[in-house]
Length: 310
Ligand SMILES: [Zn+2]
Image (cartoon, rainbow, N blue to C red; front, side, top):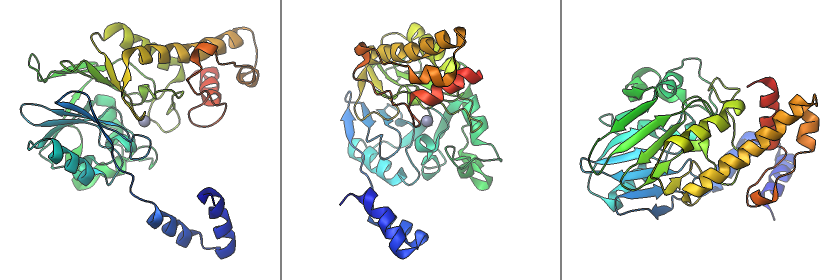
């Protein structure tokens, strides 16, 4: 029988919510990380839909560079994958944005690691009025403030310039949050997009937790990235299970902008958000994209935010 169906039955029978939650958690296997080779030196630590966001792992001359660290508790798994690929230590960790499923294991690495992030990400990590979800700023309080990124930037930063390990970091403005960083591995012609690109799902706009997401800016920010960044063939997205291509990112922007333009036309015509949501029709050319009406990755929150000017 379906586990989702069993759960409410169990709750009814026992009336022991806490006990049942513990049992469910104990029975849940620890989802494993699937590795995708991009080049000899660059790998994606995937399973982004179950283990926390996808990781880019670069074996550089001086050590290993990671983009993101998945959910809390995945530090040992990530280090085990590093050991299978190289003897080199992890020396640099870049966070694509502030969410707990991308920086959850930051504090499980040696404090000698150089942590790098866009300045708004650092500001959110350092907040004391911490929202537990979807931000994990609790992790960086007190003694753990030493894990806050010491290397920050506003719009642009290049690491290991001029050599085979060159990494270019770009910030183009608000979207999923207000710190989303596009991270380009120059020699591998590969980019990590964080959650600015969810593969074939509409984006989640984190506008209600103080993390600065914007449905109005999302498309503009993607457009700036596409118009500025060059020489990228392969994309590691925030959560999609396999690497995608640059052309998929271009299609994603068009998919988003179609919904954005539909919403703007409705506003200009004096129609309500409810009407605009009800008559959205996904164009046939985006048949492989999912555009659910409700839920976190769906039409409804995006249209509502655009109407609210967010
Ligand atoms: Zn996110």
